[in-house]
Length: 421
Image 1 (cartoon, rainbow, N blue to C red):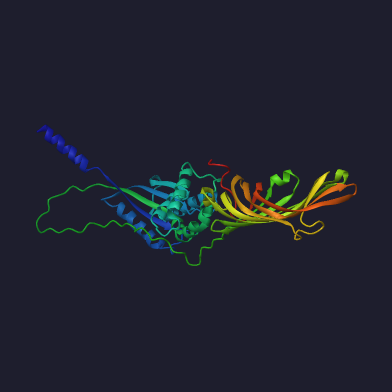
Image 2 (image 1 turned 90 degrees about the horizontal axis):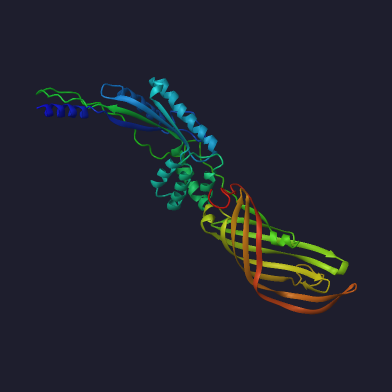
């Protein structure tokens, strides 16, 4: 009999354990603002539901235990700015609740997310229309993992996303998903204690239990009136110099433009006109090159103008080399670049490695055909005696490049140097 009584008391204690539940709602803000606007995206109705819920939880069948306020922001903008923005948005909602509901401070807890990367991951997972969705999710998970201990001001994760796949996933997220992240989430956590059941007398009616008000999960936010998202498309350009040419006293400069879809076009120019009359030392050359490149590999997917590249090129040049004896002139003596200059074409392979925020090192080699006429001569006192006119037919390496590359343009900078940090 004693065991039965003890078991009965234990069962009553178990039945009296409070059951914890949470009502969660979201309040939305305009891009870059922390002012709570009731007319924006259904905020007025959501605020009314919050007030009604607070009254319900204060009733005899429920007890409010904690109010969790989580402020967030979308990824565009700097890390410090988004951190401050998430704090201000959470405070704006808190001020509204204190004004309407008279909530004691002891029930409040806060979380400030800053850039809400995990929230963006959930939105991408639920949206099959995101361009390059699986690859974008892999990148977002990597960003979220890096931010696990807190996102630092120097971590330019938004630039990684904006550069990824030429910015196509980013532009879609900006239009469709980012408005959903410009929000503060409120969780009303309360406990309900089961009411002891009493026998119901025949013929006795009782009112229906009060329905707990729970705000529905809002649909993805449309573009707000008067706020059409506008994104400035990144611009990628590079200015470079081949340090191998610089090392042999041939000044040179090159430019490269990203054309989209992992393609780029470039042009290089070199010019050296050195001479010493003593023993007739001549070191003269000038000419140029045009090339088209296709970029590929993991780095190329993260940002244009880096990683592996494969291309074709065409060359046009003239030269005059003589070191005190026999000399060689490519092109017509005394003529211009267009007078029977030597020309070449070939294919190249290379790799561009980030070494600074706006600096790369580009290693390239090319092979192909170099042809044209050249004149052979010897120096005799003050005269140059022609010896022969020959035909150049060369198959093999025609290009070598170790270039220092300066990245120019909107969004054209590296997120890290070398490998992972």
